[in-house]
Image 1 (cartoon, rainbow, N blue to C red):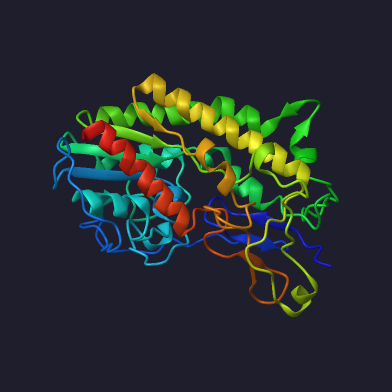
Image 2 (image 1 turned 90 degrees about the vertical axis):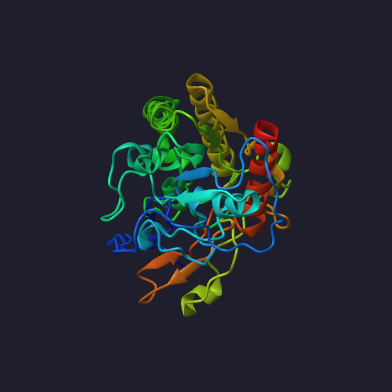
Length: 347
């Protein structure tokens, strides 16, 4: 039985078994910002009357914008950002002929967008904006909440627990909700909400002539209507684990944590929507539309499940890149949803 502690690095998918944390190293990269869109061949070209070809488009945000785990790395703004040339910003730019600067970066927080230096060689993302920017898209807030790091630490041995925390806890909820106080929910309603609001205000100021679009996060944890009667649980470990083999595309969360984490994600979606409304920014809600396509779904999912990989024996286990992030079907959905919005806004 696998009993070692499993924890997660923020939104970039590193998981640790044992006592030593693994974090991605910052690596020097080519010139920032991105000069041209990565070639995309399967999206039909279109023209928007009010956003003509060559218009400046800047993509900001975290790994949900960066296409973490999709392959075809751009190496930009630095390699540690794990940005993919298949992310939805590249597809949008290719479809509408826009001049893309993609500075999205896995692990980014709202502070990294505004004034932080996430990795050496990667300036604050907001520095890519100017008065000539016509379109800005971003996803942000998930790392402020540590939603994905929390989720990755909630991996469980069965639908009823315990989790791999080493604390013999039946669920993550049992450790993060005490006396009716949800510590993650409190963080989202306070610090996370403030960070998103400040980021959107700063983006508006730095790109005064741009349409700004804040995308929500697609469903990772489904609502009750889209949770199978038998539950979502698919084990991440089995007898083959002792030989270093792991099942693919699993969903190792307790029934309790699926319900709780759905509620947490719902709160994150709500504070993003409220912040966008207050800032005069367009909010693109993809959470409600993807409930049937969460990582729980055995078919038609838009989000990758959990796949583990062992490095150096079973003392250290990593999440494979892309876990709990949009798969290619999910990126197509984000692309089409964004394209539909742009047709309404600029058509």
